[in-house]
Length: 601
Image (cartoon, rainbow, N blue to C red):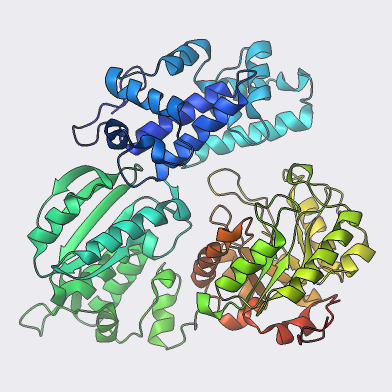
C-alpha cells in the first residue's frame, strides 16, 4: 500500500522492502535527469536502485547494521538517504524534486525516442505533463511545431503512447529478472531436511519470456517444518497466506511467490498441475475424461478405481494417459498432446548442443570486455568458436566501426585466435540495415569477414512493406550469413516491427541465410511461435548470446529456452555444428588456416 506522498505502508517484517527502496531511488534518479549539472548523482542513484532491486537480503536491515556501504556502488550519500528514509519516512531531496516537477514527466521520458530533454521541452513549451496530455497534443498536431520534432516524430510518439496504454508492463516481469531470485529460493527449499523434491513451476518452468510470479512446488516428509523454514527466509519481504500445504509471499525484489507442498507420493501430480499452462491442463483433463478418469493436482481417479491414484513423477501421469513425457516448454496447448500420443514430439535442442556463439561484442564498439577477455570467457564455458560481431559505423551510440577500424580489428582477432587454446575466434560484424535498405558497410569489407549478421536498429517505425524490403534485400546479399533479432522487439519497452514471417522464412531457405534467436532476455527474438513457423517452412537458425561482457555467455540458456518453446531441434540450429561442418555453409566465407591446425574453409 502506498501513502499519499508516494511512500509504502508496509507490514513490520517488510518495512521498506528492497523493491520499494529501488522504486524510490529510481524515481529520484529520474527527476535528477531533468536537472542540469547532476549526471553523476543521477547515475549513482540509478546504480543504487539496481543493486537494491536485485539484492536478496533486506537493504533496510543492512543499513541499520551499518554494512550497507559494503555493497558495490553504495557510498556515504546513498547510505544517508536510506537512513533518512528509515528514520523519518521521507527523503528530503525527493520531496523537493516532486514539488518541482510533475510526476507524469517520468512516464513521458521513458517513451522510446523521448528522454529527459524532450520531456522537459514538451512540459515547458506546451504544458504537457503526462501521457494523456501528450496523446492529445499529438492528435492535435501540436508536437510537430517544436524544434527537432517534425510530423514523423509526432507520429512515432503517438504510437509509443498508445503502446504504453495497452502494455501489461506492471503485471509481467522479464524471465531473466526473476530467475536469480527463483533459483535462490529453490536452492534453499531443496536444502531443508524434510524436502524430498522441489522445482519451480508455472510460466517460469515453461520458460516464458515474461512471468507474473515465482511458483514453487515441493514434496516433503515434514510439510509443517518445510513451510516454516521457507517462511523464515530473509529473501521474503512479506508472507501472507501460510498453511501446511500453501504459502504466498513477496520477495525483497517485489516478486510474488507461491509455494505448494504435496506428499512425495503425489508430487508428480502437483508439479504437473501447477506447471500448466491452463490450456495444457484443460486438454489433459479432456483426454483423461475420454478415458474414464478425472485428473487433478491430487491424482487420477476413475469409475473403476476404488481410490485416487497418485504419481511420484510427471512422466508417470503422462504414461497413465498413454502419452510420452512432454517437456515443460511445450505445454501451451499447441498440439503437444496429440504429438505425444503419436510419439512425434521433437528432440528439443539443449544448451549442451551449442558449440559456438556467432554474435558477440567487444570494447571495439559497445561491449564491456576486450576481444581476448571474451575469447577466454567463451573457452571457459566450453564453447569451441565465437564470432566477434561489433556494430557498424552508423550506430554512433554504440561507437560503430568504420571500414578502417574493422580492418584493424580483424588483425587483432587473427592474433588472438592464434593465442587462445581450444577456441576459434572468427572476425565478424553486426552490420546495420539502413533505413533505405542499403547495408552500412561496403561489400568488399563485408566479404573480408568470416561471419556477417545484418540487423535493423533504425527506422523501426516503417511499415511492413519497407521493413520487409530491407530484410529481404540484406538476405539477398551473398555476404550476409544471418539476420539478427529479426523483429526488433525489446520486451516491455518496444513492440516488434511488423514483418511477413512467411516471406522472411522462405527467403532464408532460398538464400541460405540463418535467422537468429537472440538470447538476450530483453529480446528473445525470434519469439518461439515465429521460430516454430519458420522452422516448419525449412528455415535454419543460430542461437546467439549477443554478449556484451564476459558474463554474457550465460544468456545462451535463455536463447535455448526460447528455441525449445518453438519446437526447435539441434539439427535446426547451425551453431550446434562443429566448426569444420559450419564453415562450408557460410555464404561468403573467408576463414583461412593461420597455422593453428584449424580447418580451412
